[in-house]
Length: 134
Image (tube, helix red, strand yellow):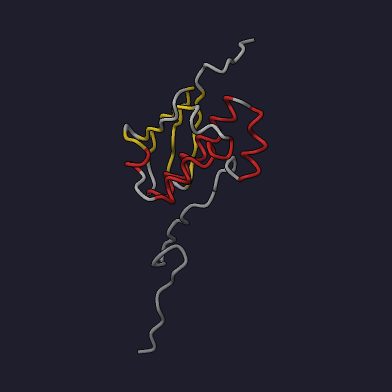
C-alpha cells in the first residue's frame, strides 16, 4: 500500500450550484491562484475572499499551503463557495485529522441548492400567467 507523506500534493473537486472547482494543494508559502490569477484579483470583494480562505484560517494553514484552482461555471458567489468546498476536501485528503474541524464549520457539505427548471406553460419554474378579467 502507498503511504502518503506531507510533501505530496492533494487534489479535490468542490461544487456549488453550477460552479465546479478543481483544487490542488501543495506545501508552500501560502499563495492561492484561481484560473491563473491571484485570488484577490479573481474575487475582488472581501466577502468572497474570506469565503475562499475560510478553511485555511479555521485549520491555521494559511501560510503553509500553496493552492492552485481551476474553476468553471456559475457566478462569482457560486465559484467562491465551490473553491471553499474544494479546498476543504483537499485539506482532508492531505490530512484526515482536519475533517472534524472542517465538518463542524460546514465546509465539507456540498450545497445542493440549484435553480429549478422552467416548466412548460409557465413563465418561470413556478410563475404562472397573470389572470385578466377583460
